[in-house]
Image (cartoon, rainbow, N blue to C red):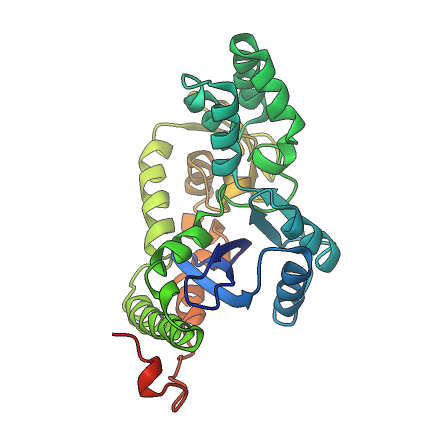
Length: 319
């Protein structure tokens, strides 16, 4: 997986109510990859600490690990307590929606979104200057929200290009109707969905003929076309100046880095890195993070999910 975990909670609708907490990741082909489900009484400090502590029993704390959530204080407390080495980001979608609503800045969402998504710190500064000119209060609130938590260009960990926790929200949306089932029937419905996903994705990964999964392979092939228009000038054994596009960045092949920011954040070679790879006769796909390879994609679904026989009686089976 890309080591980014989205955490979100949603209420259940059966007669006992309660809250479902979900932790999800994305595989190298950007499919939702659920990691854990928890049923708690409500979204509170104790509930999230219990859930995040249980999560740690299968995922160790590490500086390369990233959590994405909304600004719920109980989630923040639990993550910083249980995973002190991990990096935490906030869901940009929620922050953007709240800020735009509070400031009635309906004409600025595209600029705010552009600021969050850009990989370049210089471009981020230019966009924020424009927002500041148009709406000083909005720019201050964006800065007060801590740009390191919502900006790609300033984030401290490996967030890849994941900027919202909608991978967790997508699971909640998928389970909207089943949330009305009794809890045991609900969880068996979840198991059934995961069993189907694992089987389908395992078979799909086994049929891949490219070294990368479809998502990364499409990106590399599209950028290869753009790379053909660029000129490469060596600086030293590892660093190269790439010109001919809208930017003139420096690529460091030893660090797998480009000053444009895209290579560093996505962990998929940008067009500049691909131009250098072509000059050095290196296969571009070998520069991608291993999580995007077909071997990792297949390994993600290598195990099967079996039914738990005898847990449901006739009265618990949903219509």
